[in-house]
Image 1: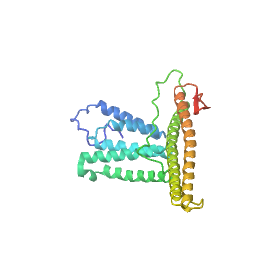
Image 2 (image 1 turned 45 degrees about the vertical axis):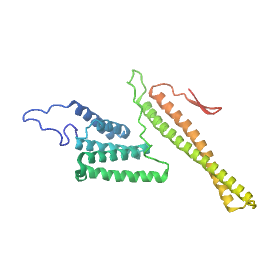
Image 3 (image 1 turned 45 degrees about the horizontal axis):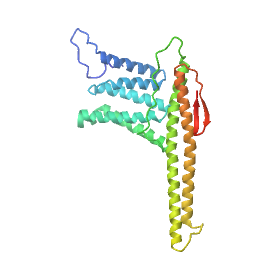
Image 4 (image 1 turned 90 degrees about the vertical axis):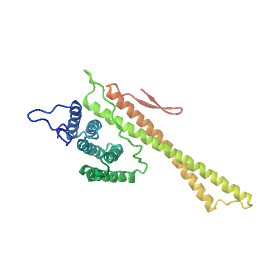
Length: 286
C-alpha cells in the first residue's frame, strides 16, 4: 500500500492530468515504506520507529491514512514485545490507541463510534490491555504510566571505517538492556525505601506498646502476640530494605555499564569499562 494513493482524503485530479505531488505526503510515504521493509525483514523495533515518524506527520484530518499507519505501528510494537524488547513496547501501544480514540472522538463526536477504524482500535486496545495484565501478574511493579520505549540513540553518519552492522546491533542491544536494567534499579530503590519505612514504623509501634504497658504497671512478656507481630513486621521491613538496596546497587551499576558499553560501541570506540569498588559503592573506570 502507498500512503500517497490510499485514503478518501486525496482530491481527484482533473481528467487527463496527473495529480500534483505533495512533498509532505511523499516524505511520510517514504518513512512508511521504510517501516514496511524493516518489518518484513524482522526488525520490528526499527520498523516501529519508522511507522511512528510517518504517523506523527499525518494530520488528524487524514483520518483513514492515519488509522492505517497506526495499526501497522501497533502491530510492530506488539511483535517487538513478543521478541523480548521489554514492556515499554506494549505500554506504548496502549498509549497510542488511547490517544487515537480520544482524537477521533474530538474530531467526529458521536459519529466516531460508527467508524470501522474506531471499532478496530477498541478491539486492539482490549487485546493490548489483556497483554499488560498478564505482564503485571508476573511483575506487579509494572506501571505503564512511567514505562516508556527505550529508543536507540540516533546513529552518526557512517564514516569510511565505521563499526560493522553486527557491532551496531550489539550496541543497540546493550543500550536497550542498560536502560531497562537501570530502570529496574530505580524500582528496587523504591523497595528499599519502603522497607525502611516499614522497619521504622514497627520500631515506633514496639516502643509505644512497651511504654504503654510499663505505664500501666503490666510489663509486656516477650511472648506477647501483638509484640511478636510487631517484631515480625520489623524484620520483614529490614529484609526488604537490605534486599532492595543490594539489588538496586547491582542493577544500577550493571545498567550504567551496559549503557556506556553500548554508546561507545556505536561510536566505534574500544569498549573498556570496569566496575571497581569504591568508598561509597562502585566506580566506573574507562
